[in-house]
Amino acid sequence: MIAATTIEEYLASMPEERRIQIEIVRKVILENIQPGFEECMSYGMIGYVVPHSIFPDGYHCNPKLPLPYANLGAKKNYVSLYLMSVDGNSELLDWFTEAYQASGKKLDMGQACLRFKKIDDLALDVIGELFAKVSLESYVDHYVGTLSRSKKK
Image (cartoon, rainbow, N blue to C red; front, top):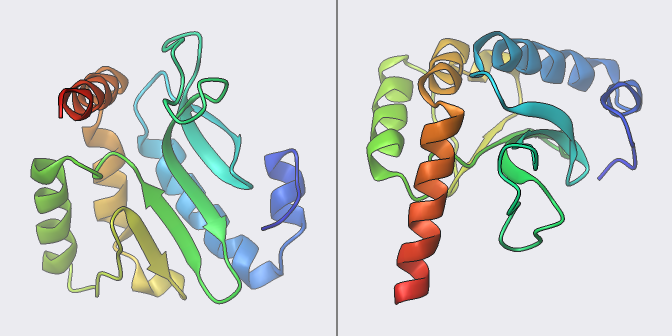
């Protein structure tokens, strides 16, 4: 993990090839993300969050942190894009998986973590469409619903 306090520091601290990859994905996110989400440093990566001004409860694991929506970060051997919107949302995950496979690109994804080594490995149009699909309100509603269902168990 890179110790940076700003996105500019974070980008400047990485090798050029990795920085270019991150910048390309970041551009797709910023062009498609719905209004209300904020870009910031989060968990040592570029984060996209629901700010406390909109969701004062914050992240249930640490309410001092804003609710995470996505993170983009360079690892030693690959780049990760964490897509919290698909975690626990089977309908959205099914759509994303099918659209990604239809793109002809190989999907390398864990629970909500999309990994890639080269920018050509990504279906950038599908990633952009995912960010365009999920409104801040629907994301927060799904998050709150998931939390309340897990507390009932």
